[in-house]
Image: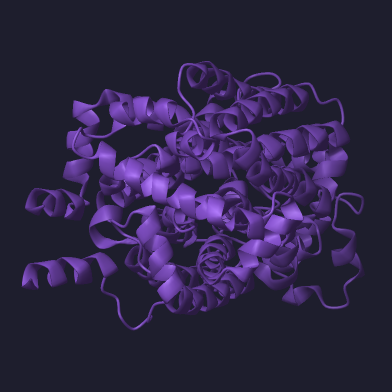
Length: 578
């Protein structure tokens, strides 16, 4: 008993490493399923760079902010549908089959995007890719979680988060690799199909989730899989826990029902499930409303907002922020089973708020110190090349670069330096070419700024604040907080909530920037993050080191947000006192 308690209480990375090296099968399973996270991350990151070149190929995309937002966010819309159906697929078809289906749809979407002859075809491809991502985003962590020993479950599920960030990092590398290649964005988007093929092949060699199999009455098959994952002295305890969960489910089956409507009704009438949903959905929505996917979807664009005009430089700096995201995911693996889910999220949100407020100040300063417009220089380009709004303005002496960009025109920097007065010109390819012929820099998304590099540094700190906590933990939390009989449907609800929040943020970001400016937009996200901090403090319990059945008991009983002690600690202290 003492040995069992000792083993169960060690939730540190060393335990994860020990188990992973002694049983390579666990790592093979987690990495293969975690490729779903890589697909998620690659799609998130690749569109940010591809969008810069899509705008060059399709004039209507370049001229219409809403069309840029639609191209980016339609993948999210597809993911909402995928996540919604993913809950049903997980319960009815199994975790493995759902992942295989996601791979097929994702691959088809990548091919459609690569050959798209028009923006609307590109949108169709984005929807297909999103559908696959939506299924994978909820199924991969669920599959890993159900096939992981409780002591290292958090670290293994974090592999999914790590592969999300690696996918984002890989997408920026691919973007950079194809910047000089004919077809640029087509290659960037088409390469996304390769990881889906790799995962499909690998998953064919892996078993179904042992918990799902046990729930389907396939006890012997479930035991054979558990023997490859758990230590010999842990197998009976795990089977006992699954047996109790299944027996309880059978007792409640008549009340729960089999249809989606009946399961939804049963889920919301169960106090433990309801509290689990409050926690899980809160964490997922907060993850999006801190603004992270505006950074991942529009990272090069944000860098250009900071006054860095070169596309390749913007992509390179975005690669740095993506690398920091990967570093943060590794930190999450090191910390999540040692310090707990709740604490990591709260600390992460506090740091995020500080970074967002700092970004607000940096972008505000950049906007107020933007270089002024030189009237003589502007008119020297001719009336046809000059910004029409500028020509019609009654008082042009107050115009600076930022006001020029808000008028949907562009700033041609002075030959003497980017920070000197320049010209406000019509934003067309022809005028841009004339500006370039004079060896001048063209700014259409952001103005030259001496503190642009500071904005990129704070953006990197924001990523480091986000990734170890709000990046990985919401997915870990949602993979373990629901009772087995409701895990598929509740995981679907939480994932749909995440994608709906993602859709709202990604579909409005460029419009918010246009209406509020970069400073006002980041201030808005700081306000959302503060609300998320309060909600998580009040609604999310600690689940570190608990078995699924113990989490259900915790939710049934309820928890005091002021008591940050893990329930497992109370039990161990009680046992020690005896």
